[in-house]
Length: 416
Ligand SMILES: [Zn+2]
Image 1 (cartoon, helix red, strand yellow):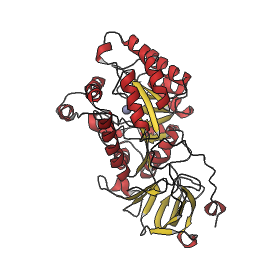
Image 2 (cartoon, protein in one colour):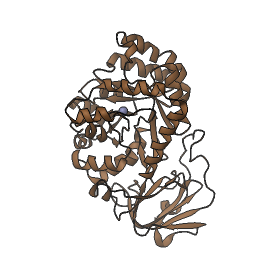
Image 3 (cartoon, protein in one colour):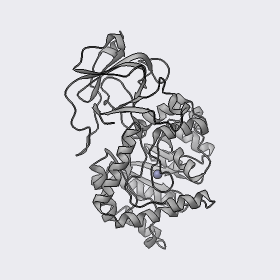
Image 4 (cartoon, protein in one colour):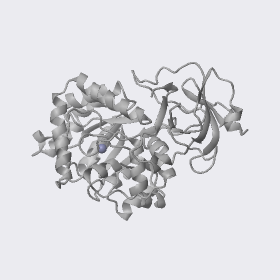
């Protein structure tokens, strides 16, 4: 058998797990998942095609990590095993863009939009008012309910943004709550200019880059800004991201969602990990993404829920850009928690093949979070994987809307 199948390296450095992270205590007994019809490794050196597919496969999990992968008949002895029944196993989805720290509901806004009213950035303020009124316990309960919903659909890593507090007190408490439940937290004080600063947006930027940043930096890994007409312009966005970077936060950008604005080129110029949305792109934007290290993260739930034109994933892929898919789960413009839904829409509407969409929802998300330990199933990777009620991972797009995730392991624990 190829050496890489038989070797348990453990060479990938795990990201620091926050307090309370469900994966922080690894199980000690080894488990084999055997009789896997199709295993997606996302490592072309381990199997066929860009997804590195292995048929009639098995995976050994030990100490919360992938210890071994290979063919079923060569599975080494383990303490226990789980029979996959010939079904497909994929890496857990990496949802690299979500807004789960909120209170309230915007059903009425959705109904109005579906009756013809356009989406604008201003709707965020509705959620800000409800979130400020909520207690820490209410925010945590809503967050954990959504994280559980995501896990049941195969998602094992979630990035969570603040952005519905918009004061030092409310933004920092949102990130404090998020950090107790999610590994990847993002300070998004520059989500929208709050109503009380509507006449003085630069004064608000000074808050975001000053006292609010001081309060939030200890609880976040990333800094984000909504660079868009009606939100923050290029100069304001640059000020926010460079201030965050000076405090050790890594930049990512809400870019080119509603217009072909300056967000993508700013993201690439500043070396942001990801430019998110990328719905309206010029040729120069596409070239910049193809040549830089910034991942283009596409959020089809948003276009679906705002009845807007979809981003052109085919154009980005053909140019050579790295593409990720994420849910953008939020109560206003994309209230889906389902990565399988995003995969299906990306294939149907955005020119992606089923293989490309699955890669973007797993390895692409990991790239957008600059994580080497997730998004693939190779020895040493974190044991985050999903068993599908399907013989092929293509069923995620082929059978849209069907709950195909049969079981989920996160850090080696069976969590769904
Ligand atoms: Zn967003």
